[in-house]
Length: 557
Image (tube, rainbow, N blue to C red; front, side, top):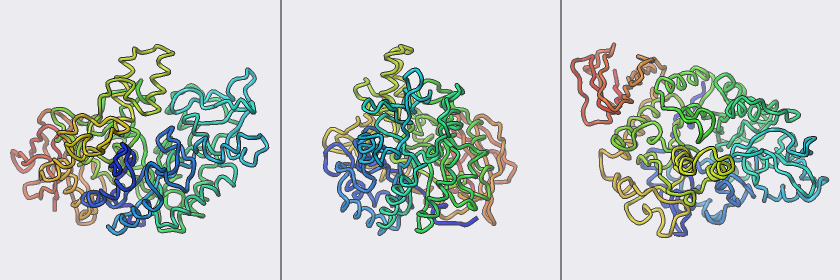
């Protein structure tokens, strides 16, 4: 396989609204990001990914775009963006943008023109259908955010498709003019010097012919079998690569919603010339049975091992993936997979030890490097996420749960958990803004913040820095061949990785109790590269006693 700069790179995702507020209006902005570039560089980050910064009415916090080639005013100006790009490059880092190409805003000029007449040249930019025989929606498709995926336009008597909110009409990629519009927008940013795109829900761009009803097979399976992997998706992605991405020193990272281990190669195998990599949802959703809120299962370490293995096997030697355990759409990593109370620091370090040693490009979400946790919102009035609000409103009608239980579900899995402002210091609002933030700051900011951890050599923050520095020095972290050890152990995750002359063993304890592990290798002379505790307790050269949530990386050479 070709080894490229983005494969070994570490990506740091910024959710601009919640990162850093420079002008103190309660909303993060581009100048706030510029202010923190040296901090990001100190983490040994290679690539910054910005969630959408384009003009938007903010029905879904920027994922409803009204102009692909302008900056949302509350984030700043195009001059601010140009400075951000310049300063990012000056520090030796790259910058990628969030391309939302499956849908736009209903306030985009294309949709506003499309609504004016069924004969409008923009009508075919979207999916319009007549009502069904009973006067209702054309089919039974449901939105990701609840309710029907079809909205009636009373003026024309036709429905338009929106797989997300009603203010996010899906674009019709069957229309070559739509594809060229998107490609032109991509070229606009690439010509400025942007280094690529993270592509939002890109597997959804091709719709099944005839818009058939979805069978009742569970929403996740409906996404996989109906909404994603449409008949022309590979044709479109190949065209996008040929006409745009391949003509720049840039790369494409896809959000792999609806993609599984059997078809991932069709998207990312190098010989297909479609996408450079994707991150899948199996880890992110491994405690969610069938969509957020309602069906949540206990974390199962053996199941997580199986997920990592099946994806590693699926693309081995032919394609590439990225690894993520958190982003703007999921609750906080340490709250979901670790212990954010008694073993907060220990489990945050251990989880990152695991994530950073999986094969593939590493994704870090803002705030995870200091162990930011879930927030407990006290009332629905504090909730800002449209998905959570829709769930709460639908529950008012169905009365399936009490309002208290519905709010508890939102607090457990809602997207606002990841979107609370970054906690920079113990000053008001965590140092994010002197004004009231758009979303409540987690009250634990007085104990969990960058300033407090910055000068503490044993902090989560400096653990991230140290591990990422070592990761750059050891190719085996990224490319090594995997050998699982004690695969069925429900508390320990242990694996050996080798590449050429490099060989490491990763030992992770997911238990809140001490665990004993006996190695096949004599590790008495092994170099300890990473240890989440200050010492490593051994009985002899093969027996290791692991403390709760301890993680260790040993260099066997």
